[in-house]
Structures are given as C-alpha cells and as structure tokens.
Image (cartoon, rainbow, N blue to C red; front, side):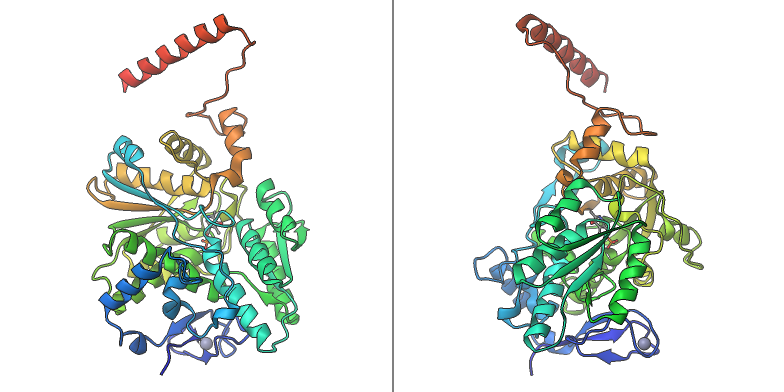
Length: 451
Ligand SMILES: *Cc1c(COP(=O)(O)O)cnc(C)c1O
Ligand SMILES: [Zn+2]
C-alpha cells in the first residue's frame, strides 16, 4: 500500500471525500471548505526517528526535488505526485535568523525570525504554490482540461503563481486590486508573462470575482481556499522544528490576512504530533493590522460571532483583507494552540519594522505587524523573557523598498518616523563632511549612553 492523500470536508458531520486531483474547492454536499487529509496510519508505519533522519538527509541536498523544504517531506505533502510533474524552485530551507541584538534590546534571549521572504519570488507563498502548480501539471498530463490557473492577490500570491506557471509553461491569470500592491509586486507577474488584470476594487472584490470566474469556467483557482496550497505552507512549522534539531519553540507569532497560513502552520504541527515526531505544541499568536482586523474583533468576542469588516488601507497591504476565506480553519487552529490574536496600528507596525531593521534585518510591513504584536505581548507579560519565540517573516523587505524609503524620509501621512534615518545631503566638501560626521557620531554616542 502506498502513501496517499485526499480532499475532505472540514465539517466532521459531513466528512465527504474527493480525489486529490479533482477540480474542487468547496464541498459539493454542504459548501464547506475542504482540507487535505493523509493516510496517517500508513505514515505511522515509519517511526518518528526514521522520518526525521529522512528529512535531515534530504533537505538542502542536491537530490531534486527532495532538497526543497517542501518536497523533502513529499510523503506528507502530496505523495501521489509524479516526479515529472513536480514544479520546484528549491523553495523552503530559508534561514532561521537568531535575532540576537533585537532580542536583547527587547528583553528576549531566544528570539528567532524565520525568513520566509528569502525565496524564489520573495514570500512564503512559494511554499504553497509549488504544490498547487505541480498538481495542475499532473492533472493536465492526465488529460484534464485546465487551460489556465487564476488567483486574486494582494501581491505575493500572484508573483508566486506567475513564476511557477511560467516555469511549467502553464498560462496564469492574476486579479489585482488597482493601486493597492507595491510596484515590485506588480512587476513580478508582468515579467513572468501572466495575464494581469488590474481591477477597480480591493482584495475582497478580486476574491469574489475570481471565485465566480472559476466556478463557471474551467480555469483553476489558486487562492488558499484551495487547500493544496496549505499542504505546502504547513511545512514551515516542520522546517522550524527541524532547524531547532527537532525541538518545539514556545511561541510562534505570524501575521494573518486571509488566514490560510496560520491554519497551515497548525496543520504541520498536528501531523508531527500524530506521528510522534514532537511531544508538545507551541502557542500560536496571530498578528493583524488594526486596519484589517476581523479575526482580532472576533477573538475579543471569544469567537462567538464573526463579522467581516471593511478593510482600510494599511502599509501591510498583503493583509488588507476584511473577509478572510479561512476564518473557520484559523479559529480551529487558535483553539488547538492556546492561541492569542493581537493587532498593531500603522505607527506601531512601521516603527517595529524600522527598529528591527536597525539590528540587521530588512523587514516587510507584515513582519512589522508581527514584531509590533510581539512587543505588546512582552510588555503585558504574556510572552515571558525566557521563552523561545519565533516570528514568521512573510515577505522580503525589498518588495516594499518604496514605503520603507518614505518612512525614513518622514513622508508617510499619519506616521511619525520614530526610527527614521534619512540621508544627509551635503555639498562635496571634505570639511563639511568631516564636521557633520563628528557631530552625528557624537550625537549617536550620547543617545547610546542615555539608553
Ligand atoms: C499572504 C501574505 C500574508 C497573509 O497570509 P494569509 O494566509 O493570507 O493569512 C502575510 N504576509 C505576506 C507578505 C503575504 O504575502
Ligand atoms: Zn461537506
């Protein structure tokens, strides 16, 4: 008997199952979300130590595609996929950065930042997209009629979809909210040859259009409602544990928008627990932008009632989502992982990002949201000084060079550049350069001494 997985309705009362290579996103019986289930009794025939040894042997190796942080775990991700259909760009394996200096400054000795933005298209979306596009390639090779793959995006999903589809020679379509993604994020799918539709709406508007479109046409939906992506993204927690030599951290802070990624994080941990690879769970903290905080508001109400919000513009544009598709899955994860939800204002996220940059990072604003929430929880004593904490950094800061520059120039409306470091403009004159340097270096000594 071989390893296998299938789609299953998340409603335990229904539990309808579907083939993993079927084109389906919601349960046909009850319209609930689907999730990928694995034959865990088959997986359990291999002992936990053997799985660890296998993953340690494969990860970052040159054994294509098993060197990938996703495909080194193929049996637990998408076992039925053929090697020929695998579309991999060596995703995963990103640095788990010991934030020694930033941690010391905020009173944490054991703070780590998982650099998911150090990836082919610059965000964690690569982890999920490699699985989804590989599945599409497999379905097309089996003769299924899938002329194109489409997604709505706040920027990073479309970049990942466009790149993986381009590599696999599969047409891709991306629906972006006009003027709401960064220039870097817009130019990525354009460069990779995607059909880019820039729509006069926000992300939630693009999302409902793409759902309608993929319902009626046989264009394949690539949003995280499609739970194939969750299978790839769930490897991030597995990889973090592997990078700690199979030790589980105490707390993980993750920014949340559509809430697929937090669900994925939890799913990876539960699978490892079921297979005896770990014997405890981390606590999971979801960080939201105050301008797009439906999960935070529901958390305040003890998850008794969910209401979508009208997401307001935020620097953290990839999480400007008012009606998250994976809300139910995220609540389930938070309940299983002793979860906390906290929010950050524009000022807080911009300052936290810039302050951490001063210690050698180069954060995207969503990582800024997570760092700002971390600071709040330390202040409130909800995260203790001796905890091992991991912050999930979701994208590369270079995608947001524009807004980071505006922060340092103090040009962002409503935000004070507390940690701004604007360039000093001078004539090319040695005396003036020397005098300025003396003054600036003295000043920075004084500030350091005052601390
Ligand atoms: C997609 C994305 C998120 C949010 O992930 P969800 O699964 O939608 O919660 C956060 N940060 C960045 C940079 C992203 O691209
Ligand atoms: Zn169902």
